[in-house]
Figure 1 (cartoon, rainbow, N blue to C red):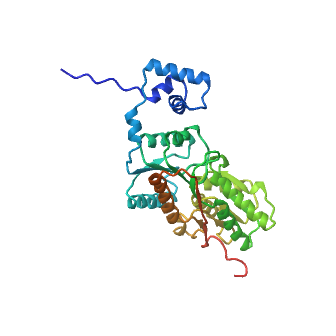
Figure 2 (cartoon, one colour):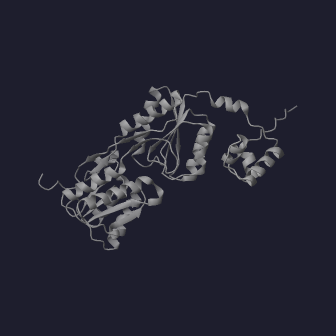
Figure 3 (cartoon, helix red, strand yellow):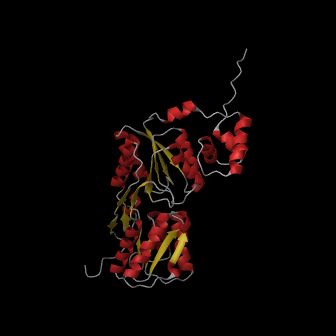
Length: 344
């Protein structure tokens, strides 16, 4: 006779669904924490009673056991800057005795929150989180569960964590300073959407800093927005050309967009750097392979990745919760897509 399967255990997600609240609200009620309205708490307690939900004490105990694994969340694997960084992180983690669970967020806040929940459910010992920069209430699961996290690349406003990052504002200023030193004055900028990432905001601020330092007027018409892809660079450059914007150089806020920019300028019969100088950001491997070789700003990804892993492992193994910040300085890489500094 075929055995009957035991009934599926009721989970915190079931309670949240019935009560019409988030799992983090249920967690606060179960753990008797503040921050939940009376109405929400009443619905949660009613759902708990109706479903006969019992918090899984064994699962809580297992949370305390090391799994020798860390989670890594990045926005994209298609951006050429990420594969080398992932390799450094995986190798460093392995040297410290940890495996790596990789998640791709596609740069969406909702998906970032879902992946944090997934990694917590997998009981990883800690998480490296390359966040887009925005806050989502789902991030609170890290505090609720005490999961160690290091946010890499950029900070999350209003969500205090340990951070390992690169000074994007300084890097952008270095790039635009270089263009100005080569005699450029009409400098356009290709940006991703400002609301998508704090890194974009920092690089835009660095662009403006350089103009201000050299007393060059900022002109809004020289700003083209799209996204951080090759296609985004093509579209943004076409936008500048279609609008008849006067420019002698372009700072693209990442290398993929810069390469799309170069392809578009060349297709329109413009010489680089003879007619237009182009500089990117990130120093992706392809930057030194294309023609002309792309001037860009390099983030020290090897040091960055090692520092991020070692910082997380320290949090995991010591249980420290003090928040710290490590900021790396980028490096200017001058190649063929920009001219030489005047007087050099």
